[in-house]
Length: 435
Image (cartoon, rainbow, N blue to C red; front, side, top):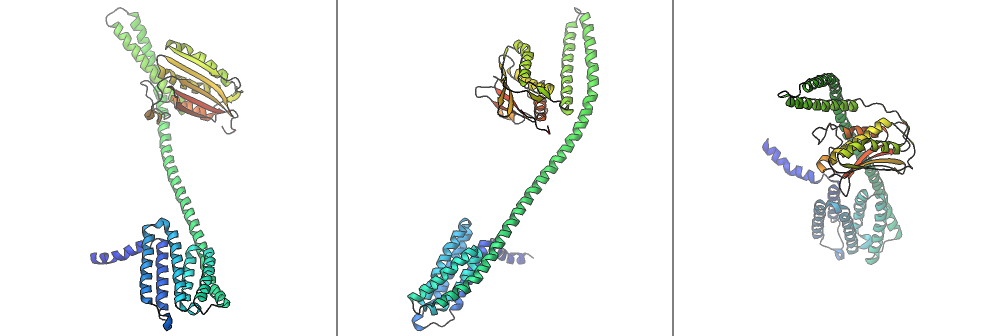
């Protein structure tokens, strides 16, 4: 079994070398030309036309091996290699004609395989060009080494060489176009299959996420009742503790109860925000003023910002026309961005709320003078439940983006050159009908 496999290895190597069309063409052209030259050597030449044909065949074969090696080593320049080889072959045939009798030389028959094979590789236009060149070389050889070639002989040669060469070139061109079309269709099919596989994976993930979402939604519903009971009992317990103020350990108990209530409020806020995200309400659009919304929101958060030592500044463009928006939802989206800014600044700094007209869109921006957003955080910025804050829910930005997309807009962000970040809600003035 093993020796048989070993014996086949050289043949396999040869077949691998001939896998490319260019190498096959180089081998076929070499076989045709070297074989044709050797075969025509059987014709007895006149004494004054004797040449060392065996040496010519040997060196011609070596030259063809060199062409094959060049094509193998440097496949990028294959076409230019074959053009150069074609020129050498034509000159060789012409030289043989001149040396062996001009128009009466039997080596004129080398034009047939040379033009035909090259026509198959280069196409029918090259076939016509080579036919004209062959006729010219034949006539020139006869003129330089009489007897001269009659014009009928030149025309007959061109016809006999050109017609089959043109047919082969035509077939080659059609085959080349058909192959290109098959490759194009294959690429399209491969791309379609890749997209289909990706879509199947996304669908599988979406189905799993939908199942998890339904279970989570039910859990959130069930958790709300115990949370309410815990909060109510903690409030009652806090009243009891206050009624016994001054007794031993009552101050510590009051602190524990206050901590319990804070954690319950955080959990309740998380549950409420998740339910908002999972059961996103259908927007109700009405004609509203974006500038008024931004101004009203700035006044609403100003007291909280002042207690943190922050400055709130607004820049509203009164040229912004009335727009169809869901005021409550859009207010919530901007408020979520504002809350992020307040938490980022913590103590000291400035928060800037702006609204302006930008072409066919309106931009609502929330800027802060904080440290900006780091690269590792930016990659997960809009992912649900991702947060860098100890008490954060990780849903604020996701909800803001969801609301923005429901309005047919987009939510983007960038770090400011002077420090801080800016989040921009860009809404089309004319809302699309499908939104």
